[in-house]
Image (tube, rainbow, N blue to C red; front, side, top):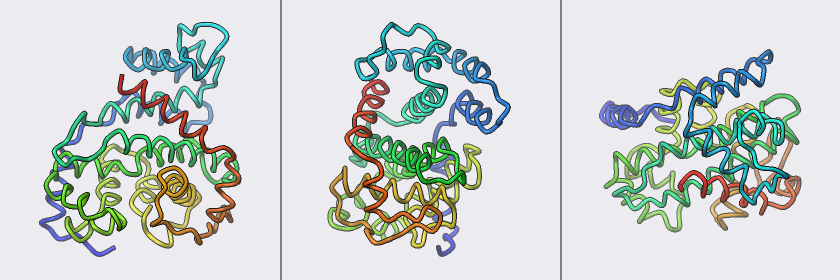
Length: 281
């Protein structure tokens, strides 16, 4: 990618600075998750210190989606029933959703954006479980999927006029190509700037920055994100402007093989819908 002009870089820096900070409680959860000696009780303690997060998690777990045999009244009990990883994913999802604007002047569809991000996150996590061959943490892939398009939110909030023009002219073209033409940079780049500001690991920053580039970055997490994003666009969003021929070096997966390995994709949509409803209510 070509270097940004000083004018564009300054504009992006200003926009990123105006975004809210990622919640410290969720950063703590992610940090603890990377420690193989971390006990579940340490994660539970962090979550329970955030009462809003706790209420949302319990609301989801007591919904018809999970259909658990008895009412869940604590995060500790939730971990017993569904596992610490699911609880972590819920906490992260709610934190990310909490930073989304309810409306924007660009006319950007936040609910559609959120649906795609949640589906991509779920698919990326499952691809890592099935095909990561121990090279990538499924939780990191979930985070990458959840945050990969956050640059669109930055554009919608703080570069609304330019992004509205992008949206109007991208009905039959890839959005990131039109962004490059009109804004001078695409959402993957500004998204990477944002999550770097949020102190996420360099590997995550790099794969978000490159998730529209070919070939994608030489890493398993980048491959899982690229495949998940493409599957979500092609199969769920019914998009045709995707590369169906690419095959991953680390996973060895083509788009067709990766899609077949996931089984019923409606499960990812249902999970995303449940998270979305709980988050926005």
